[in-house]
Each structure stands twice: as C-alpha cells, then as structure tokens.
Image (cartoon, rainbow, N blue to C red; front, side, top):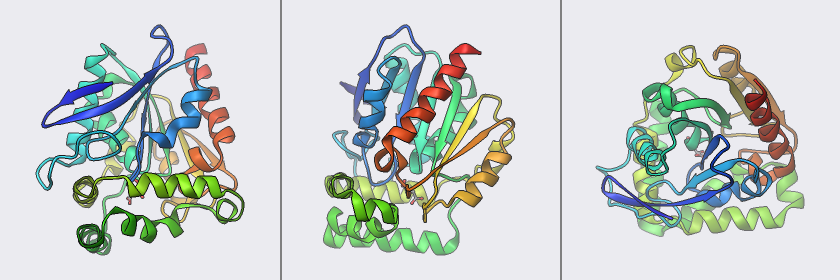
Length: 268
Ligand code: MLT
C-alpha cells in the first residue's frame, strides 16, 4: 500500500486483524521491510504494519541531504499510523529501526503501547563513526549500493549464519544492493546526525523487551544489556547463533520472543 508522507511516498505492508493491537516493525540500514518477512508470517494473529522507510525498498528516495533524519523517519511513521487510524501501537525496531523507535518513544510517547528494541543502542555516533559515515556515503556515490553492502556484510551476520545459512546471506545482499543510493546517503546523514537518546531511556513508561544477537559485532550484547537496565522494567533476551540480524538469522527464536511479549501485553 502506498502512503504519502512529507516529500516522499512509503510502501507499507499491512496484515492481520484490525481488532488486535498493531505492531509497527521498523527495519535497519541499509535494509528494507523484507527483514521482517518471517515475523509477519508468524505473527498473523496480530496486525503488522511494516513500512519501507523513505529511501529504502519500494518507498521513494528523495534526494538528500535535506529530507533524512531520525525525526523525519519518526514523523513519517506517525503519518502511517494516522493513515490507518491507529491511535497507539507496539513498536519493534532493529538497529537504525531501534533509533527510530527511541525517537518515537521520545516524541510521541502517547502513541506507543510497548517497544521491542533489537540490536540497537541509545548513544549518538562518535567522531570516528561520523567520519566512517562520510566515507561510506562517498563509497555509495562512487561505486553504488552493492559496494556498500559488501563493506557492511562481514560484520552483519554471525559465524554460524555464514557457515550454515547461504539463503540468509543472499537475502541480506539482495536487500542491501537494491537500496537506492540517494536513500543510503540520506540514511547515513540521519545516522550521523542522530541525537543521543541515553536520557530518553529512563523516561520510558511502557513495557520494553531488548533483544540482542549473541554474536552481534555492531551492537554487542553487553552494552545492550546495560541499555535494558537503564529502561525501567525492561527485559533482556540474547539470541544464540545470531549476529546483527536475529529476525533473519534465527527467525523461530525471534518469533517466540515477540509472540510471548505480545501475549503478555494482551494478558496484562
Ligand atoms: C543498522 O543495522 O541499521 C546499522 O548498523 C545502524 C548503524 O550503522 O548505526
């Protein structure tokens, strides 16, 4: 379904019964909504709202730099919720999607029922990380999306995934290669300029589940456990044999965690 937002048009997949709580699934960088395919199938009892962020997947990719920021991604998703007349949602974001989820929790707490934060963090980029964003944007412009993908891939997945799941490697490569260059450059700008959210953590007043891939090199489990401790009442789960992308690498384990969390929310 196409949803117009400020200066762009998002592709949004919607499934499940409208009477149940909605779950908004937000992908990471440089990925798209296909990250969540296994979860959408497994969570068929719930209403899943799965957007391609601006500049990703089948959404339009405005030319950067003006139109990309965590604030803009979050505002786009508010427009999506409004379009479906969803007053409040469970939000589930992975990595950059987690940064967007934290922005939603900070700016629109009344619209968020609960949150799942996967393989993400609250801190802003260091000076070194910002330099790396600039170098990656230059690589994207010089050599295209696939070159960016090849640079990121070695750190994305667990050793077990590289050894045993060629289908997952191919799916990640394909997602990264089809991301428009203007979307990559825009996302890198949004990542580089994103606000520090460490002070948001103890303002969160909804149930939170923090999920970490045990072998995640990009957002490792130890700081993620510390992030969970900083959020009142948050729970922490580590997914064995997964790197930065547990929803793809260990879908059954992630499906169990999400379904358990959602059932508890409904029960409570
Ligand atoms: C992601 O998966 O979204 C990225 O690793 C986020 C980042 O580079 O900070």
